[in-house]
Image (cartoon, rainbow, N blue to C red; front, top):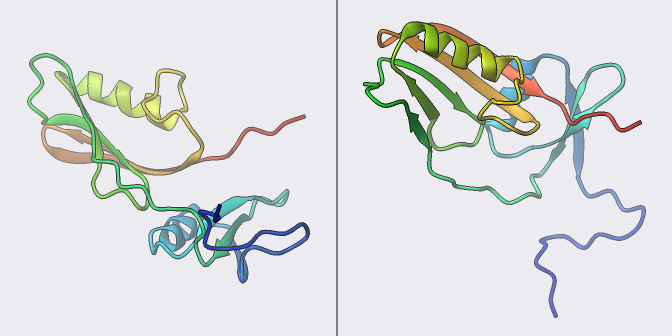
Length: 144
């Protein structure tokens, strides 16, 4: 049976030809959005570690839209990963509902629609106008 990987991993073998790191979340987003890097983790000094060329497969899930009954999309939260084809959206009926949904995503609330580690660009629209934007980086939890 042949392997489904494009590389042959052996014990002690370095899988990535190039390892690089960056400190700023925006630099991490910029590198990941090229599609040439994998995010490997975070060093103890806070620097993000990336490997190139990309070994993981690209996923092409279509964007999801969650709507409250009666919502028209003018009050919404959009969030997307660096390789997502478009933003996922959460539509709310009121500006306060949209603000609380935005805070839920940014604060890593258990009810957040973003439930894993990764990097997301989160935008809040109130009345159809961009009101806030934040780049959210969620690290894998530390195992003790």
